[in-house]
Image 1 (tube, one colour):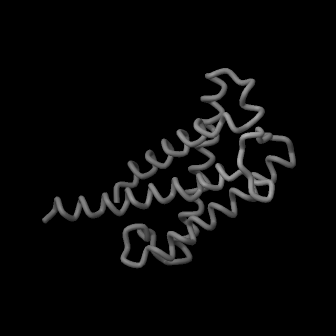
Image 2 (tube, rainbow, N blue to C red; image 1 turned 60 degrees about the vertical axis):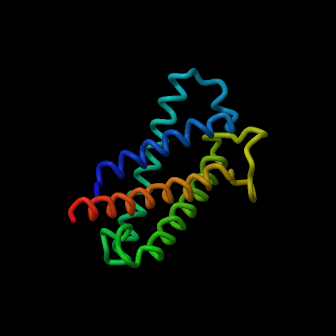
Length: 144
């Protein structure tokens, strides 16, 4: 599996997501373009660290570092996404309660938690998994 490309893809997708959802946060409106880019960069790196930690935890539990490209990948993938959602809920709750950020009126919420940050932890991992599985198939076809 092309690990570096998977990491870079995940970082890029999280950065793009952070930029796209920034208008839904009240405190982002007052930032300059460069401040927004820096803030979204830090957030994307943090997202990548959380995703990597969850990945390693799932690999440990399922005893398979290459679980995204294994035959029995679905259970591990569901666990990875669920861990991400739990972390996102906890982090969003903490950030909101400490005033680290404030949702704008346009942010859709469920029980006070933004749906866009939660969707990020479903969509970005799903795209990363599709990429990893496709890359494996491409490598396998090229070697035959």
